[in-house]
Image: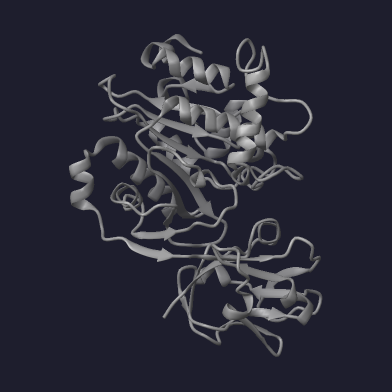
Length: 383
């Protein structure tokens, strides 16, 4: 911990960061470099936190998290731009960068998580976090005389990192938490929230008018119960300049605008409720691919440019791709209550995989690895 950083931050926060194994920096301690690739190499594969100190020390801080997935670049690119010309915010502003190791593994910014590792943003389950906390509390050294970096036996590196992030969030107790992500395919920006409130929607509207209200449980950070608003922002497609600008503009605005100013200039929200997640059942082994026509080598072939239709309205009978009966039987589309809805929403007409009813589809990916390890897309029913 450099003296400059220590002098501008609460000693309690400095201590918490040290105990949790996070390096803290101010913008003046960092070089934005000439590219994101060079910037990410500065951190020795370790997660880190950058704090932009406010003029007033007594204000409650705000917190952004980013790079929970190593291939989602908009949040860290926004951070790099903020470091180049650091604003002095109204509130102490912390930006926590998580999956540095995955991002810095060649090819850079390709790996969502390290090969064979768990998805960090599926590790924020209350049960796992509390179990790890119990183990740490029982230790005489971990989190006390030595940082929380690993635990023996049962817990993976992503689970421990999720725990460290959770502990830092609770130590900071921010006024709000904004988790910045990208979609893996082309997409407009949108937000995802657990609870619909004026406070949540105000934060969301700084990035996009589109908001998805979801109670699906997958172990994502925004699902945790905090005493302050927590929202996920999907800034747009990873690597897109517009997505990076969306992240930068939203963060910058929340740094410098007062609450009345935020309310005055916000667009009306467009809220989508009750999303359904289309995925391949975990016990099914199917071959998935993308292309302009049915590929006989695949059980499921999705349109090569399907991600271009993110947030479009799909009419009943519209084709997403092609599937064999074996491929279609491997698909699952569960709602928030855990009810299987695959036959209500999708159908196999001949060899064509089609919408059975009017849907709005989003978070459509065109990467096979992400479709198989996470999901193909989300859907909301339309009238």
